[in-house]
Amino acid sequence: MNRLQALVAAILFANSLVSTACQQVKQVTATIGGLISLSKDIGAKFGEPSVSCNLMNGTSLTIDIVNSSRRGLPDEPRRAAALDIARYAYAHYDSRDHLSAVGVRFVRYWSIVIFTYNDATDLFAFTGAELSAWYKQQTSQPPGQLGAKSEGPPNNRLKQTARGRSGAESLRRTRAAA
Image (tube, rainbow, N blue to C red):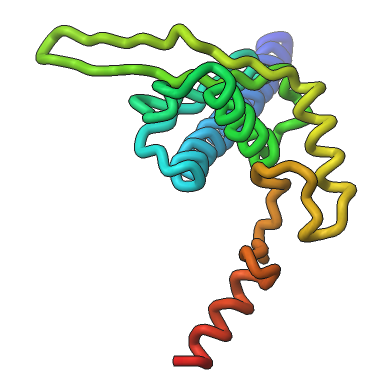
């Protein structure tokens, strides 16, 4: 009976380990998928072909904009562009409440055969608290009354066009006119 109890205990222990591991794998997979999606969204929104998002310890998000024309801007316009990108990323990242910092780097990268050059020295860092305050301000305003010039919080279904119509409404009007 002693061996049977030990076997049952070992099976239960192994089962709990496997269950925990599966949950961790699902969580990591979801996080990686979210970062890939965020990278693509930032690239599309800001016209950047190469964007990479990295998450450290689940709280620090770094966005690398590779070989961007914005890298050549003077400091203040480059910082303003970085702030717009950080706000957009914060607003569109599902786990934004866990972020303590968002950094944006304009990276210069090139490679020849086996030699690679990577310059990522200019990091513009923004605290989670300042981005959170901006986000709360944006979500408290009525639709179409966003205070900042950058992208407001996401409205996943009906994004407003410049004329105040939703994308779906604009599409219907365009099709009806044709």
